[in-house]
Length: 202
Picture 1: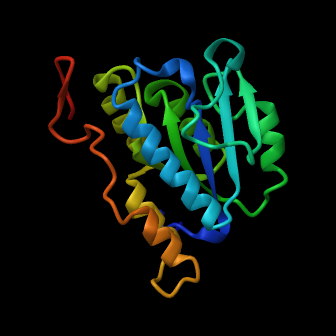
Picture 2: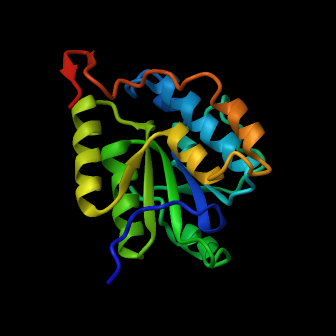
């Protein structure tokens, strides 16, 4: 069997945005920065006309998706499961039979993101986790979740790397508007040698 290289292909890729909700403010490490990068990914998906799946964890109690991320034009799936692959999302994905790769952003990294990744891998999707758009309440949980997901077969990457990879070529007709999204570097999200609340990232 050919070795999986994880090369991204815009034609068969969707963006999953997991549980970026109001009530998590003040609890998630680097949440303002994670919101900013997740919004960058959503804007890129819109420019590139990618399918987008948005979930909200128990929105009655945890509120809607944060106001900085406009999902008013997207299909939003409420859930209580600690995975995005609830029956309504699975049914929706059946309407997108060409999608083979998932780009994943959101929270929490060690709970809903990790369980979504494991479920997607079981369904033979390629999974690309945007490291600077995923977080948890604890840096320890966040970083060990990245390790486990990588070991399971997911690809860990960054927002800029993914957006440029989706374009694939400066001659792509949507490259210029995507380039505008990354003109300013993504904010620091504590992935490298940063201590927050006494915890040091791996």
